[in-house]
Image 1 (cartoon, helix red, strand yellow):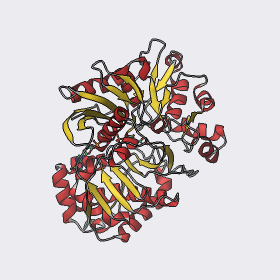
Image 2 (cartoon, protein in one colour):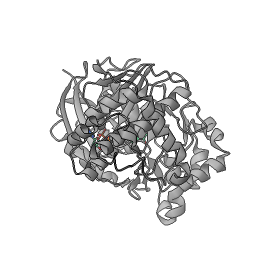
Image 3 (cartoon, protein in one colour):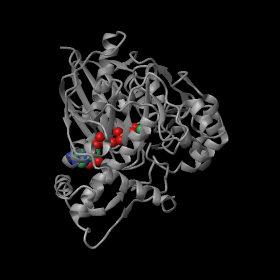
Image 4 (tube, helix red, strand yellow):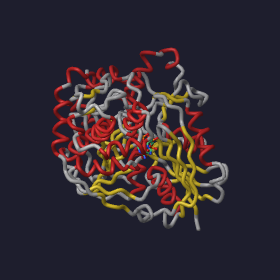
Amino acid sequence: MALVAGVDSSTQSTKVVVCDADTGMVVREGRAAHLDSTEADPALWWAAFEEASAGLLDGVGAIGVGGQQHGMVCLDAAGEVVRPALLWNDTRSAPAAAELVTELGGPRAWVEAVGSVPVASFTVTKLRWFARAEPELAARAEAVLLPHDWLTWRLGGRSAYTTDRGDASGTGYFSAATGSYRTDILKLAFGRDLELPRVASPSSVVGETSSGAVISAGTGDNMAAALGLGLRPGDVVVSLGTSGTAFGVSEVASADASGAVAGFADATGRHLPLVCTLNAARVLSTVAGLLGVSLAELDSLALSAAPGADGLTLLPYLDGERTPNLPDARGLLAGLTRANATPANLARAAVEGMLGGLADALDALTAQGMPVNRVLLIGGAAASEAVRAVAPALFGAPVSVPDPAEYVALGAARQAAWALRGGAEPPEWPVAAVEIAGESTPSVRAAYARVRDGAQDLLR
Ligand SMILES: Nc1ncnc2c1ncn2[C@@H]1O[C@H](COP(=O)(O)OP(=O)(O)O)[C@@H](O)[C@H]1O
Ligand SMILES: O=C(CO)[C@@H](O)[C@H](O)COP(=O)(O)O
């Protein structure tokens, strides 16, 4: 049995899986936690990878890395990290994003240039912030990489100084449509050129580890998840991790000047229109902490309340929000009365509020012509019984839950198997999923929309 490994270096943790290269069956896996911060020393990602992969990689013939998107990893001339990486969920570059949108000529100009309208998550806005806020440190920067690029480079050395089309499409200076960098945009943001990694093709081998395993190109975590699920047109993923994302694979690029749908590329040479919220799984853990209960107890409380939480609505912008682009927003609990002020209603409002943002994300994809025939629910919070009860009621499409697995790491492993074996398409790895049912509750979405739209001025 040939073995391949996949890595998911995401916001809260690193996960590693080792799979049968032919079937995708997971035979070994490990994980290690990350610090809770919106900036990180990449050395901590490497330490987490070493911890999570300890004892797992013997006999592995290929390895691929899926990483959280957008992180700004700047290196000096000696290849040393200049400052901790600013991560996708760091919002300090929101003013820089607004400046850059104006400087290039507005949202439509950005969509035509790179397929997306940049917000604080995008690497290009972080480079602008870096150049303006920390000029002496920025003067030392000679190159900029993404988190998965940096880990791939650490694994394979100079030859593995690469990225892929999928992750590159989240920088704001790469066009998924043309497959080329827009170095003019990088220079507009940062003030001068920086060395960028070579964009490797989807099934290429970019290097070799010290133990002789070939290294695939890697990709961004959402692109890897799409690969791990073997996503087909009509399937849309809702991923509930630190971020909430809704995305699907498309043969054509999206072009949403509203900025809600980012025109990313996938990891197979196609496109991955994607909507991302800043608030997902941690809405549940935060409210569980507020109530002093476990996640399982939060589930029980939420399931004991009626749909609509007796009029209690939570707009869960607890870390600001990315979609809608309200980086300085705070959460808002509306409709509170003496009668509905119960732990059960608050738990229910947390689940419905978090999923309300993802239901809006699905609407944004539909508006861009993305067919939503089936929703696949993944990410840590997909394990929640309350989430599984509420999602079908809000999403307006059949919802299925794939067998529990780390689909980002699985996708990276599938890419590694593709690089190992070659061929026009990645190996066929079966993914089983169970459909979950739920009665539609349009009144819950209507209540969420009223609070969302009515509070816009309060939220800026
Ligand atoms: N049963 C559960 N119910 C609700 N949330 C859960 C459950 N299990 C895990 N989570 C949450 O999932 C998150 C981790 O999901 P994951 O997809 O690994 O995140 P990321 O990829 O962003 O690091 C954590 O915030 C954790 O609290
Ligand atoms: O910014 C995005 C997508 O544009 C996020 O999806 C990040 O890629 C982080 O992913 P998770 O850590 O939540 O998996």
